[in-house]
Length: 299
Image (tube, rainbow, N blue to C red; front, side, top):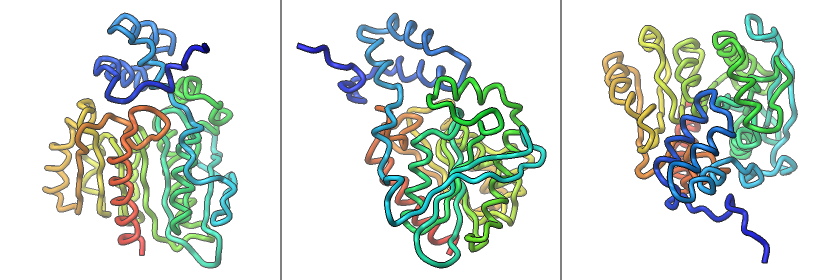
């Protein structure tokens, strides 16, 4: 009898909270994978299998095929003055058919343009948006094909220049020949915090922002936000979600339209369908809210 692959047998509820906490530390620090797995094996019985189950399986992430006839996708290069190299590369996806389309920038996590983020861009094009998912790692060779190296590469980039690359990507998309000029942004984890950052930097050039589990914009930038925000948080994500009440109070005081949701019994990363942190119910609900929001604000 062949041994079962533990990465295919763990249900989210079977993963100990300590393993989730260590995985969050692994994702947001310089911890090597070997150390994450080693420490997991010492935390709880079966910890190694739980840890292995949390590593992404991107074959599961594809919901819209890159060959789907209802969309057209290609990689594009464009200038990025002040960024990490002066040039950027991104994954541009459009609906088939004529016309200009409302545009949405999709900002990746802290590991570059992986297959999950590309699929999110295709999901947006599938329902009528022009979507661009920039690869922040393109100045140093692009997403390397695995998150471990991608995280290391992104950690080595100059953070302010990386944010400038995302700002330039947003402006490139807004002024693209296929864009209607109405621009939204969504992003996940680091991309969520970058969505908040872009809302402050772009002012009235941005029409909508929908960050997922992202840290707030800097206090001095919040007053510069001119677009409505739709914010999504995981209940079991104290590092980020604990900041939401203060952020909400500041947005309210600044009279910035916003709505925030904390999804019960979810982990940081619940929208990402390539790991057991994924919650289908919360992902589907949050995504339906995001699409409705963009359709309204970018019409």
